[in-house]
Amino acid sequence: MFRKTLEFLRPWFVNRKTHLYQLGPRLTPEQYPEALSQWFRNRTGKKLNLDNPQTFDEKIQWLKLHDSTAAKTALADKHSAKEAIARIIGSRHIVPLLGVWDKFDDIDFARLPDKFALKASHGSGWNLIVEDKSKLNMRRARHKFNKWMQRNLTFHGGLELHYKDIKPQIIAEDYIGIEPDHPADCKFYCFNGEPQLFWMVAYDRHGHYRGKFYTLDFTPLPNFYNCDELPGFPQRPRYLNKMAELSRLLSRDFIFARVDFYEAGGRLYFGEITFTPTSGILPWRGEEYNIQFGQMLRLPFED
Image (cartoon, rainbow, N blue to C red):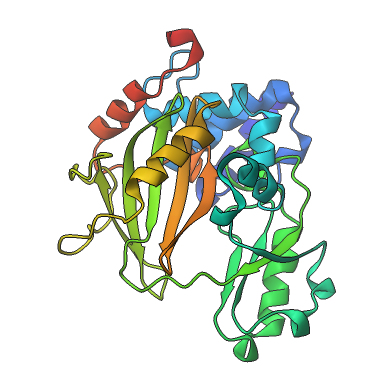
């Protein structure tokens, strides 16, 4: 019956190249592998090998199905993660929380500073950076958050199951100013609790980014992703060694984790911990890099 449902929806999936949000709520766990395989094929054009995954992307799909733990859920929740991360690396590295609400209309904007960040606790990229509260388009902001609060990222992002049971909330954080074109965002790729390399990313005010990969001793690596490279010779991050140390602490219990940090105002802040970057369909510059990263990611049955 389920296979017939998939066959019926296949043209809709292929034409829309969209998510599982209409089919997802009706799925049972036994149906997840086939649904995920169909989603993966529609998004990448490739057949997903879940029996013997080889590439990084394939192994991330395997981890979605077999390693979406309660610990990952707690750390993916932008609200609960603050306390959990602070216990491990200290509260001085946590962006201060200004408030938390169940819905947009509960937010008391009069009590918020002129600059702040609003985030949906249960999503990825569902954020609004407010640099001038007096210029905030309230109607547009309400529309965005009301839409996000009705979504479950699990079925909007390719069965990222560790998001499934996160309570939807809205949090406000202190505004952390990052200079345009300054590579303050450092993303550490940790395999079995050991950071192997990191990606420095610079964002402009329009949200466009450039990035470059480095070893932990700041030796440049090829640009594995299909994006523009950082211009010139970026400065070595001030807290590079500390970031690597904290990444090791935060990833020690996981097969794979990407741990993000920011340098801003002379301080080091934790950004987020990501277990399924880009939902396992990364913008590789070449398939050889997908394979290379896959060799570094060792699944339990490969030991």
